[in-house]
Image 1 (cartoon, rainbow, N blue to C red):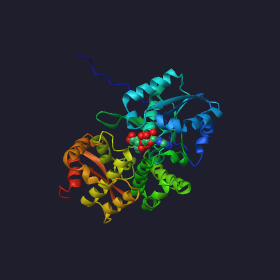
Image 2: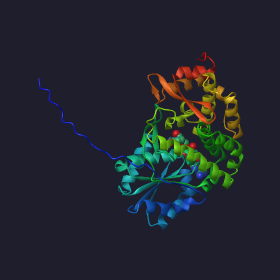
Image 3: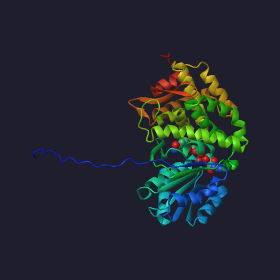
Image 4: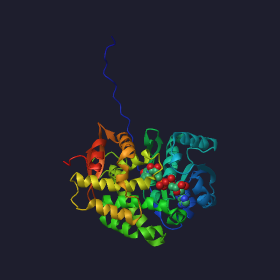
Length: 379
Ligand SMILES: NC(=O)c1ccc[n+]([C@@H]2O[C@H](COP(=O)([O-])OP(=O)(O)OC[C@H]3O[C@@H](n4cnc5c(N)ncnc54)[C@H](O)[C@@H]3O)[C@@H](O)[C@H]2O)c1
């Protein structure tokens, strides 16, 4: 028997990393991509401009021109559009393209697109050579107020959404509401769902302004869109600043941003991703309001009604009950049980005390489905 010896105890000291980065919001800021990149990364030479097939065709030339005017060599990489891009094989293929393009550790990647592009390309930027600089240029409303902000990057696995991922904070984010003019209306509505989520969590005023301004956002009125996009992403940014790596379990951590997402991810999965993320979030928000009422954590009466009215104002789906019954309901229940936030059978479920004030619950998937279906006696 070897003699047990006292281990040599050393410590590796890692100074805290500053994850702060600028977010520029304004009509036409895409034109500043090259100069902002030069300012942040004076040693970079090559830039991988990653975009999906739709967005590259619409906005790739403008982004490339700005980068080339600042003397970067641009490598264009086109990914499939939509959720099917967020697959491990697409990730490996993208990293392979970066290797083949001769990018080095001091070079950078620009994610030009919606949340699927920023999730996939952001994860590639995190992994390629153990991490290169990432610039986010979100082109959907959802990505401008949400996905491009906060450093979460991931692809999906067959067993669930976003299961293969990490944190990789961008060096900068350029939010140009003019890019939304080409965005189909259904996608604009999806972004409005995430804006309502930010209001529901942190600001009743923002919630009401988004519901009232939904038609103006959909009509691409530049002033109101810029103002509401700026407020919405600032609400998310301040939550992230409090808990950048989602370590806090209290009532201010970034896990709150999962409001509506527990059920949304289950619906997306149960529909084989036919239902868009933002549409699923809309149903998830209604579900969260219903659970809050039925669990008696809501101090505001008529919470589900108010949430449903706001979603309807943006013509977002509100037919929650259609997802709770028959075979579809069973698929949702099964997908909910696979949720990655599951711990010892319970899910950290974000509810609402009222619009503008979140509440954390710990519920099993069966309890959530029971409450939503009205089967479980509220306690
Ligand atoms: N990482 C995060 O913090 C975070 C947060 C929220 C959502 N997400 C993820 O984001 C994804 C959804 O993102 P999304 O809703 O932006 O979808 P998306 O990226 O699939 O884009 C939606 C569609 O709009 C097209 N499009 C994008 N910009 C356009 C433009 N300006 N003009 C015309 N067409 C355009 C795309 O080609 C695509 O067909 C989901 O996978 C979700 O999980 C991530």
